[in-house]
Image (tube, rainbow, N blue to C red; front, top):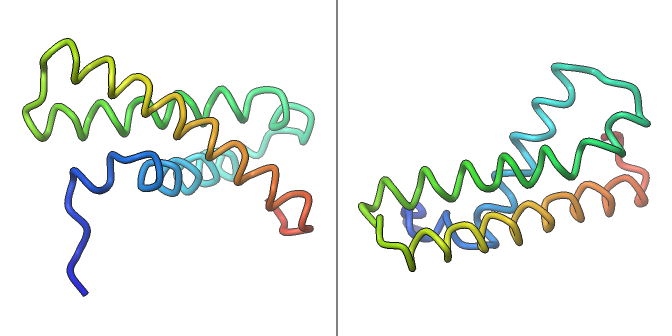
Length: 96
């Protein structure tokens, strides 16, 4: 099995997983109250996903306006997907 490439990682599926991992690390490092996580966790997920996708987009040398709009939409969807993964894990009883 080959290692994933940058263009595979900046898809919604790739960015959602990366975003969830980075967000969980940040939330565990900061250790905020559960109410704070519920309120600001999704926003943090979207911000992290946007950063991941834009970094990947620039790493590939894609700087056209169409590429940047696509990156913004991909980051938004990946961030909300990562927030959904967090909610799903929480409802399944996984400690988050």
